[in-house]
Image 1 (cartoon, rainbow, N blue to C red):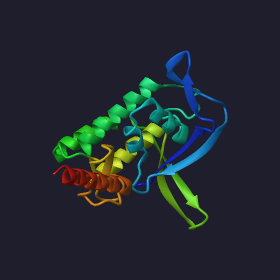
Image 2: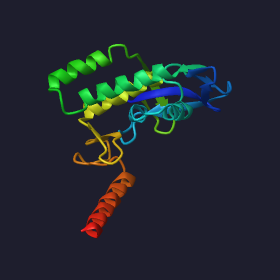
Image 3: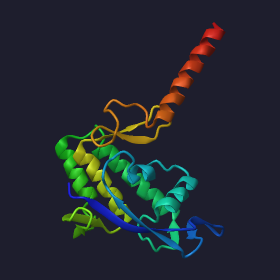
Image 4: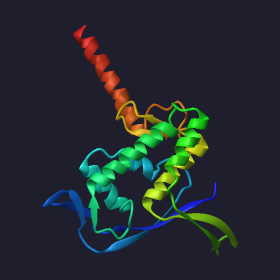
Length: 207
């Protein structure tokens, strides 16, 4: 796969809710910090971080860390728009990298999903390697996340829910997890084991 890169910015001082308009987030300052991202593996894709946001606090943490999904110079963000974006990506992921569609249905669905994605080809020379390479540059963070979603589909990764916290995560190629993994992290695996042991202990005591 041709490397996908994103040159982006985030607000250094983050966003906060507008006290007069609770559905809007306003940047605390004009200060920005440049960010460069590249899809190298699927161990911790940003698209899953957004899809796993549930509360307004989760969404605020996401944009504070990774920037606005659509324009890096946005000073006002709509929470409802970001929620809708997360819901749409979640639906696409479960349909296209889940286990419910045939390969042809999945291909059709994903082509529909990325029909408006905009990528710019660029040839980049590296002084370190002394070689050039072709890359595709995403125009927005949302586009970059859509390409992470496509990379997961191409690699044959599968989206599943953690048996402990219910968050979505990927298993299979490029994810660092086995295809039969049941937990999104070691923390959840250990927490689930402790919960099972506590339940067994309670049953033993009550018996």
